[in-house]
Amino acid sequence: MTTNRTFTMLKPDAVDKGYIGAILKKINAAGFKIVAMKMTRLTRAGAEEFYKIHKERPFFGELVDYMTCGPIVAAILEKDNAVEDFRVLIGATDPAEAAEGTIRKLYAESIGNNAIHGSDSNENSEIESAFHFSGREVFSGNFF
Ligand code: IDP
Ligand code: MG
Image 1 (tube, protein in one colour):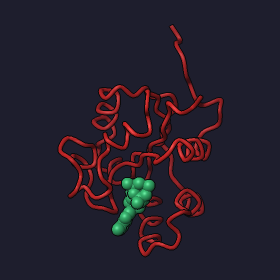
Image 2: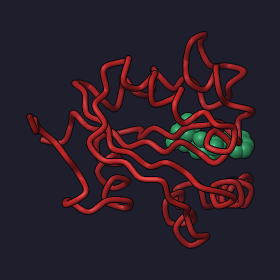
Image 3: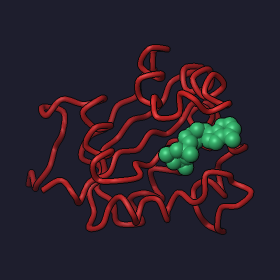
């Protein structure tokens, strides 16, 4: 039922540089509907929980420092094949390896400060969405 959704965060570097509007425009232009969105800031404990699968990686401390250094924009997006199509839209983790026209190629600074997050599976999309939003904050369907 929620396999047509994915979860994203515009990361602190992208927010700080004023790229929120440009990135959301690309997301909408690629056919994703925004069904939940908020500007917020991760606590240290929150970032550690969100990225706990990377706990043993050498860059974990750096990742938590970065993800808590400023505001982020969290959102849930709807589209057929959302998870996979969104990973294509954002591009490779390292912007130096990201394809032309992808969000990370256009807006990311480095492999660490890489502008945007995209869920890597339907299961993680649900977990990550529930981490940031309650059901009451998700708006699906037509309102007019
Ligand atoms: P993904 O965001 O493309 O799924 P992951 O491997 O899941 O990439 O890594 C999660 C996040 O950790 C990345 O988006 C990036 O911010 C950070 N990261 C990944 N690899 C490195 C690294 O080698 N150095 C510093 N930060 C990294
Ligand atoms: Mg990942």
